[in-house]
Image (cartoon, rainbow, N blue to C red; front, side, top):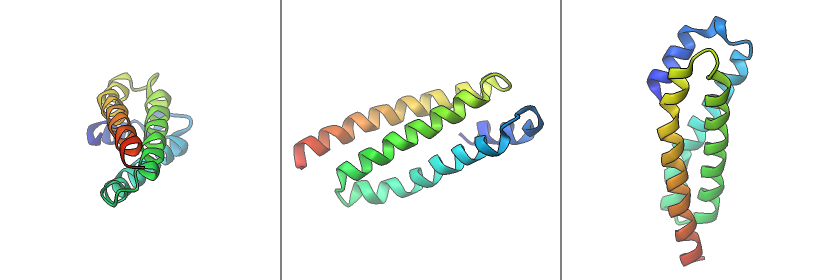
Length: 98
């Protein structure tokens, strides 16, 4: 993630929607930082919703940078995959402990 965002910042003039791209990254980062506390407090439905928003904003970030920075976009794909896996596990916790 860090390499992607640093390279995007270095290429900021190549993105017509640079502010929106940064907003998507910052939103997912803030949710990401808040997520462990919510999950560890056993609020599984809330943490699942948070994961879905993290997936959405990371996918939007990745999609919007792809044309001008395909390498930086592809760096985010494993993270998106990891969040999908985490959402599946979170769903299992929610269904088991609701």
